[in-house]
Amino acid sequence: VQLVQSGGGLVQAGDSLRLSCVPSDRTFSPNVMGWFRQAPGQGRDIVAAIGWSVGGAYYPDSMKDRFTISRDNVTNTVSLQIVNLKPEDTAVYYCGAAVKGWDEYDLWGQGTQVTVSS
Picture 1 (tube, one colour):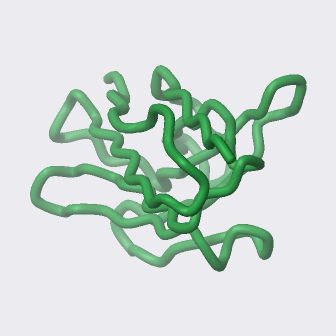
Picture 2 (spheres, helix red, strand yellow; picture 1 turned 45 degrees about the horizontal axis):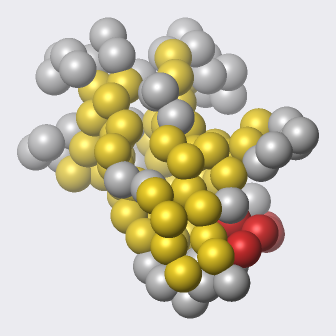
């Protein structure tokens, strides 16, 4: 199974952006799907997560205002909507899947660059 990401690119501060992630296998059923980001020289930080079967979204406190994770049950697409983008949102964004457990991600998308210009 592969996680195929789309979206991203160069945007202006204040813009909105949607990133998408689709598993290559339609029968893929992880426990949790999440979005992470990694800025240059920084570690990979979680942005949001969503339960695959039970639903329910999780956001770190710093991400609750401008980030929304969702899942389309028909297309199996997990999306991350970001509004009011800021230059500090510049990073490579990854989707990940927790298959064996609930908080350890063992499958990753290819990553997509988001660059926010001021």
